[in-house]
Length: 173
Image 1 (cartoon, rainbow, N blue to C red):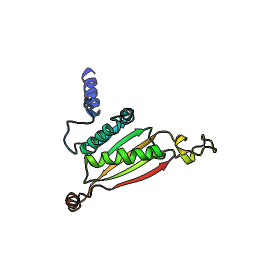
Image 2 (image 1 turned 120 degrees about the vertical axis):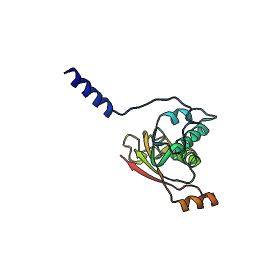
Image 3 (image 1 turned 90 degrees about the vertical axis):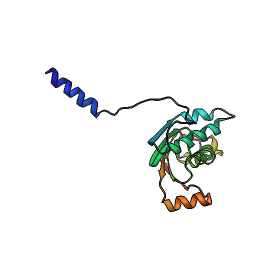
Image 4 (image 1 turned 45 degrees about the horizontal axis):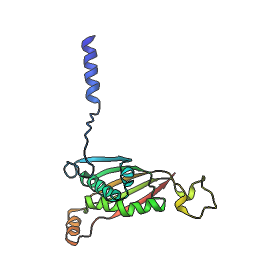
């Protein structure tokens, strides 16, 4: 009975996912290019943006490193209070998200899905408010996929310094 119990425990431990945690500076990661399938951010970018002087630059560096270490057809998942359905969130995508992704891999394309509430459909906001910046859409989840391009397209982009294409789709709940 004891041998059978040990065999069951060994079988269960082999089928479990092994996770290893490491602490690094997200702006300068010690990993090779295209080493990871998924990169997840839950609050790091929002926290870094709170620094008035270096916030945007630090976020661009973090996103560049995330893009660099992400393999083709891999995903970056971001949970953020900056919802691209608002002017502030859309500005963040243009000033921080796009430059960060392109800075980490300028030859791949990017497909971004923004999942969250749309300000126009928020029933909690007063209809008398004229300034959409004051309306709160709530947090958003960004699902970002790194899209492979052909070798010919990659070489052409490197010659012309054209860079990546970024497509965005919005999903409202």
